[in-house]
Structures are given as C-alpha cells and as structure tokens.
Image (cartoon, rainbow, N blue to C red; front, top):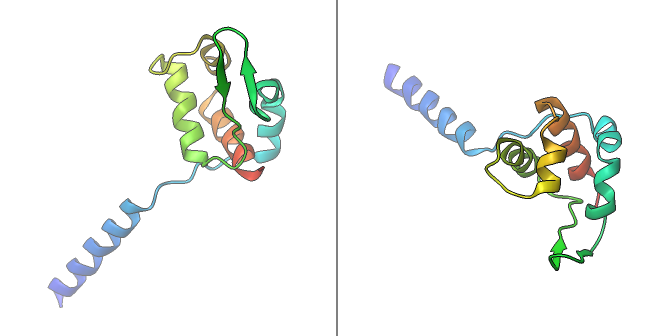
Length: 105
C-alpha cells in the first residue's frame, strides 16, 4: 500500500512539474501598462535604424513574456528601448502585461 501511495505522489509531482506555470495577471491593468508598447508591438513594424522587424506580441504565451521582460530588466537580453521600459516594472506589472498580451490576437 505504501509503495502505491509513493508511486502516486511521484507521478503527480512529475505531472505538475511538466505543466508550465502560467503567469497570473490582471489583463486590464496590463492593457494600461502596455499603451506605450503598442506603437512598436501592435503590428508589423520595421525600425529605420537598424532595419529589423519588431514582433507582434498578441497571443504570445504569458510565461514567455514574463521571462523576456525579466531578462531585459536583468540585462540578460539587450535592447536599449526594451531595457528602459522593463527596468521599472514590478513582477506583478510583468504578469499583468503578459496576461493582456496573451488575451489579444
């Protein structure tokens, strides 16, 4: 009986570890926080210098958005505009932005 319980517990741990944790955020607050971001990330935008495409973010996974913003804030990803925007964001702000981005197409 104890072996069955241990196997069940181990199975549940493996299952829950395999499911990515979804960022919990307030999409309405995220919409407000993201207003300045929409100029670049609302559609296909090409910057003049250097010439590159800015990704449209609508529908992106919330966990990816949070991870990217944290990396910009920590200096692990480099883009001067993104770092300037991310540096003052709290973890909750990032989750809110991510919830909004995930909710739109």
